Length: 298
Ligand code: HEC
Ligand code: HEC
Image (cartoon, rainbow, N blue to C red; front, side):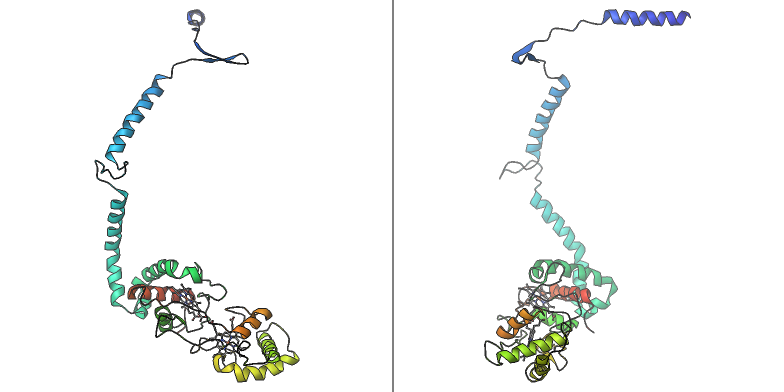
């Protein structure tokens, strides 16, 4: 009982001694009767603010912040980059030396180095090849996909190496791959009707349309004019770079109007030669990478 009473007393005392609210100056700005107090900034805030300024001055002297003036620490972003690069090169040297001493085939057969070469090839591909073949090597109209197992010039490791080194129809390389799709229309090698019929034949063989009257005639025209490069079965030929015409994979397109364009004007896709642009080891990595995408040909 006694305890309770004392507690009450203290509460009453506290209420009495509460200091009166001080009159605070205003800035004398007034908006619709609302006045602005002119309170000083809190001390903790001001101290933090000054501390920040002092820190910033120290930072500006210690680290590079004024153009062309050396900082106290001597640290630069560029210096850091060079250091990091040297570290990375040192770490990669063991692998790169190994690759230098091996053939592309040996690299593929070696579990300890294959993945490193593929990753290197992927990076080099993004830099040198993706503009034409797509970042995922999926290709585009006129630029073959490197993901499937359909090859114009061959998917054996040696074939891929040759293609990368010497390019295709590359005017700057003597050993480049040659062989053009002829302009049967422009060069008047076939009549309009003959072209129409052979197109129908190609469309029948690639299972796009049912056989027609024209397509039967087209078969003869094909045997006489096309089979030499594209093969009797239209299966394509690596020696001439002529693609398979009787399946569903197209370089330029298998629809009627694209076929008409191909037959009229011919085709000669160009791929640059890389032998003089890239070093031998990078080309090896690229070939291993491209081979790994599709499984290549044996
Ligand atoms: C300027 C565009 C271009 C660039 C860059 C390019 N290619 Fe090609 N590449 C082509 C074209 C076009 C063809 C198809 C040529 C043809 O019609 O026969 C081709 C074909 C190929 C083939 C042959 C495919 C087959 O079916 O036989 C391979 C392999 C290849 N490229 C790999 C590469 C690699 C690897 C790089 C990078 C080092 C590269 N290409 C860079 C345009 C390019
Ligand atoms: C001298 C060899 C040669 C002859 C003959 C030839 N072609 Fe071609 N053809 C090629 C080559 C090489 C290509 C690939 C061109 C390229 O990669 O740019 C091609 C491409 C094509 C394409 C494009 C295929 C695609 O995937 O888009 C068609 C269609 C085609 N030929 C049809 C024919 C027909 C039909 C004939 C006969 C009337 C014929 N060719 C005769 C060499 C030949």
